[in-house]
Structures are given as C-alpha cells and as structure tokens.
Amino acid sequence: METHDIEHCKHRLVELRTEHHDLDDVIARLAKDPLIDELELKRLKKRKLMLKDMIAHLESKIIPDLNA
Image 1 (cartoon, rainbow, N blue to C red):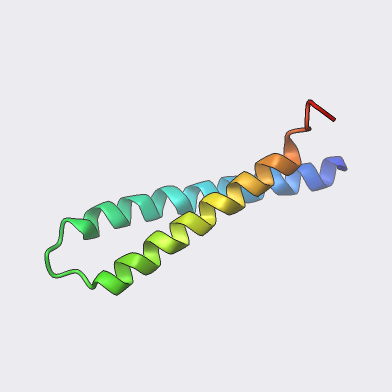
Image 2 (cartoon, rainbow, N blue to C red):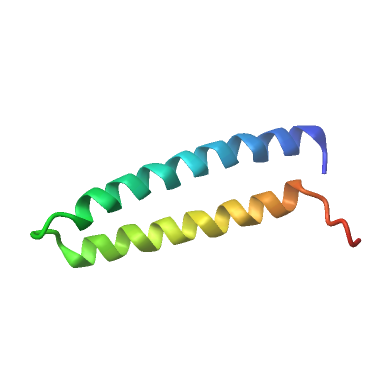
C-alpha cells in the first residue's frame, strides 16, 4: 500500500472513530429517555455496528499481516 493511501486510510479512521464515539454518546443518552423511539435507537445501534466493521476493515488494510 502506498504512503498516500495509508495516510488517507488513517485520516478516514479518525473520522470513523469520532463518529463511532459520538454515536455511542447519543445512544447512551437516548437509552435513558423513556419516550425514545425504539426504531430510531435500533437504527443508531446498527449504524454504530457498521462503523465498527468499517474501522476494523481499514485497520486490517493498514496493519500488515504478520503471518504473510
């Protein structure tokens, strides 16, 4: 992977981690609200899980496979 691509992935990782952390805060706040729309909460949790998967994928592209 070229240096430019690695830097782009690192920048994207920062963005994804920030969004993931922000979603975590929002979900925690909303979960305390008894009037929360459960469907909306499920959507937010699904988005958070998708972000986690994207983060893991990018991390695997940046970190070389030591067994290779």
